[in-house]
Image (spheres, rainbow, N blue to C red):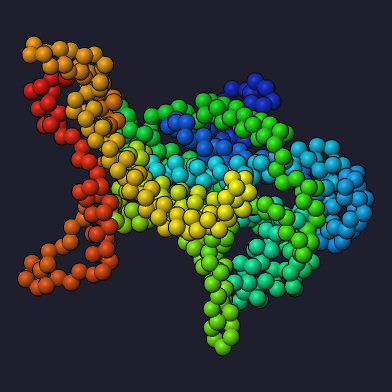
Length: 551
């Protein structure tokens, strides 16, 4: 008797072709467990817009990588200790001098460790370029309006990275315990002591006792190499993820809208360019480090509390705070039964973060004033946002004025000027220069808007002069190409807000809150008459081209 037997299912086999080599086999194995093929297909061909200004953010990223690499190397030789030793190394001018182990190890790195001085220089120069590129990158984002929805969170991440980078740089150049960095630490101690009520306790906590104590260098070292870099790596990862998710903004042009991206794929174009640019940045920083010395600690000598070196200056990015303290009058008041409040230091300590926050909070102020809740993927031309551009220029002028105040002694000695005259000039400039720069920049932007409008309506100048029958000479104007017309007319022009009617639909008086009135007033200042030039309408353009031709 025969019976039909059901065939049992055999093992499941893949229909994929046999891997050609071990690399492909490894890729197949990984894909079977992590799905890397579909992930790569979805993301590695992602399109990104392309513009030279995007390199500013890349410079910041690459210099951060350089800082991490050189910093790891330097930690192998640096001794973060304030224990005293007598120097007996190869640098003869310092032989027999008592100094901290931190200073002695830094001198050894500079003169006895092979390649040590170059590594120190690369580390320091990369930090300077890192902060400069971050600040410039943020200004580019600010002036083009690239901080608007949906990128406000990324703007905050960038602001935090800049803030942490500035303070980590300050801690970094304070570690060698030389006379210059010790002066900077004393400046920090004075700022901490000026904090009302808790300043003295904070100072004792940081220094482990009276200044200079024995703990400040080890504590700064831990914060410098571990705490702040760890936070910055997390913020940087989040920043890059959001950049990848949202992509860069793109400038107005034919075919570019809020709903598409015109550009190049991430792989291979962007990755190839990024790889080459990284080595270019590394090479430029290395050349700078090889030919221009920064922070020659052997020339300053070890720190002693009873000495201050002449021309003691912080790195440029902290010169802003130095200038605030130098030009602030030395005011003191006595409160609460004899407690001294040092306004000469405390007021600058409050103003410093306030000025920084003024530009960092701008995205939220602008969104509140305009009431705009839409997404923006097209970057503004700075001239088309006159108030924003004028505010950014005023902020930069304030930064530069106070940077000059932080170097008032250098300006006095190099240009044979009175240091008191420089100080008074900076005090006056603190209030006057930002206002003057704001007015000039705003008028400049409006003038450029009028020029764009003239180009749209009348065309571009050709340089060809024609004589009419009645003897008049005119210049021939050629119509702009359609792509250029699109670029000059595609920007948004929000209308200023208006107060709601005084009474509602039932005739009951409507109460208008203070915030509402402030918002309407700011809106008129941002977008009202005198703050923007109306774009040419199609009727105006048609009337001129049909009635008069392009002259």
